[in-house]
Length: 373
Image 1 (cartoon, rainbow, N blue to C red):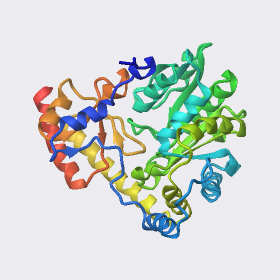
Image 2 (image 1 turned 90 degrees about the vertical axis):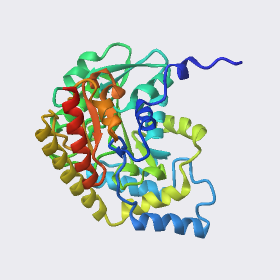
Image 3 (image 1 turned 180 degrees about the vertical axis):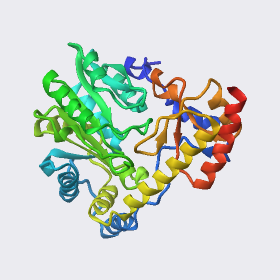
């Protein structure tokens, strides 16, 4: 039997998936990282029209349709005030592929990539698949990414560092001052900053900022996606952008791994970007209400939890055995260590679920907490 690559042997199935499989079919799922809103009707209709007219039958350009990339560029000109050329955008199979090609194009075997700890599970795995070494960087007590900790961790082997705001699994939002520091670090140390901004629109307190707004060099690459912005996780449509030179290298990876993103999804995402954004405000307001409901419930139980400022995740500090007790009682929560050693002693809660189920889950979490504290 042929051997397996060392790269694939360094990674394993996500700990999040293992928790899902351990839960019963009727469990309340507070582990699922997707909005519980439907995709906007105008986005769905655009995909149907593209299919029925035959426009979705053929490959698009490797980078994606020109009209989609123009819509993405317009979005970022409006939201971040940057002059983005549509030619410097690649439409990808979700934000996951965008992260993958960004790292593949910039990181060599033996390099180091600094990742937040706790942080999104793909950062560690995708770094290992490049042959590089992920270097976890601890977060502050409030679960925000600390620029000083990133800068202190840089070595001669550092090729890149990853930042994520609003954050998964933490719900933390980086301040403007911190984001300016991310840009400065990328500039002064000549390392790549990969900025994961897929939760950009879900900010409750403060505002979203991108390092690309402040960088003086081209050492920032931005990953984004329609998945969380417009509740389109199943459509698998993301994008990545940066300088012309960086996009050309990422395109080399993308064109052989993917050829192009799904054509129907491209037309749907373009319609979402150009259409009524009312659903975005509705989702954000709903998630903020649910966040407050969750935090009030944690206060009643006695669980300490840093206040999430965005996304739809909370990461409370929990006693040993809490996650298993929740699972045994039919509530799915994810152990914090699934996101890195820095998450140990925490659990990740996704509150992108019905408010009545969230109240029921809080009752169960209260019972679980009493059983193990």
